[in-house]
Image 1 (tube, protein in one colour):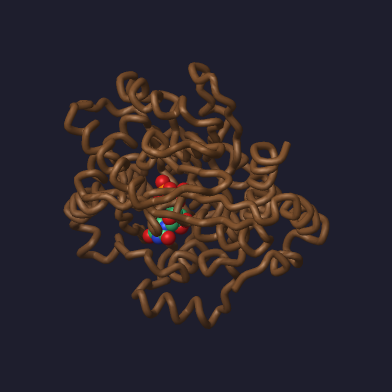
Image 2: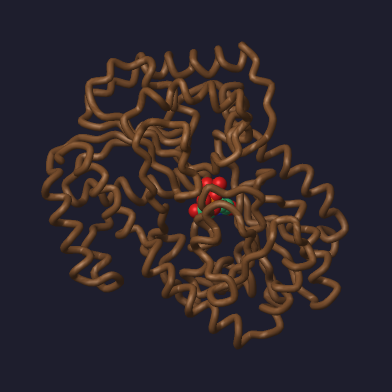
Length: 403
Ligand code: UDP
């Protein structure tokens, strides 16, 4: 099992020492994280890595996953979309199932911890159904700059019960909320199977196992099939790139239990990509295997992240950590991870031709791609590794529980 000391060779003694010192102040504090899926998506990725380390350094951190029926997750995906700017028909039925599921879950989820940290909108109303005997923190991972006003007013009634809210980027700060808001950037774990170094032999075996030919340069987007990740835009970009340079596109996708839209968009994309699927120029690969994701983020000439809205976009830092340059939309948390023209390229989410042009540049100019990749890794090392995230969480817990 991983331990904080394993990170010494990457981040050094000072960083690790500071984390131990802060953790010492929180020894025996019992906290709990609650979210809505154990796998699929960035929140589960972060919790899987962070919670083990919190326990390793002496903070008793638990994790509960909200249990609910599938129609609850259809509704909460609509809420997710509404909070990111879509319009929504906020019917009484939707509100009722949202509340009932949280009420039900609270009956068998006993929260006598020193601190409760609730992630994203799905379990947000839990606070209403619990006797609040400790600080509650709402950790919002999505872009809430332009929410549907009616929905925002509804969820606000729950947010207001919290002691503190954590956002992924300063730009998501809400002026209409009286509670304290802190920014904590998400992070990647350099030692997880998804991000660790791989031998050439394992890379070759994995490419063979998942039938990924390397006779042409690869462009890959690693994402759930979600409208905000703009899979159709990805194909449009690929169309234009293909006119200039022969290459292959990989959709590396997974499904999350709290995202029922995934399968619908997957089916649609398979239809739209028809001719390329037949020619083998577009590949769909299920990315449940962390080593496969790792390999694709390493061997691709370019990683695309063509999001329309993005809370953070862990896939960007994941690729950059592997020295693979990224062409990504200038939205949400992405511009904080990419220094445009230095560690990768940022493009307007509507600018298909501009995006294609940057992809072509990186495929053709290998020297530039390698230079950007090196800068990108260094940047991720400074800002987006799990040790920094752990340190931020410890500061937060010390503030809330000790100071
Ligand atoms: N992911 C994966 N396999 C896939 C697609 C995505 O493991 O086929 C992972 C990806 O590597 C990243 C997370 O899911 O760790 C997605 O996080 P991100 O913040 O990019 O987006 P979210 O899904 O949270 O909107």
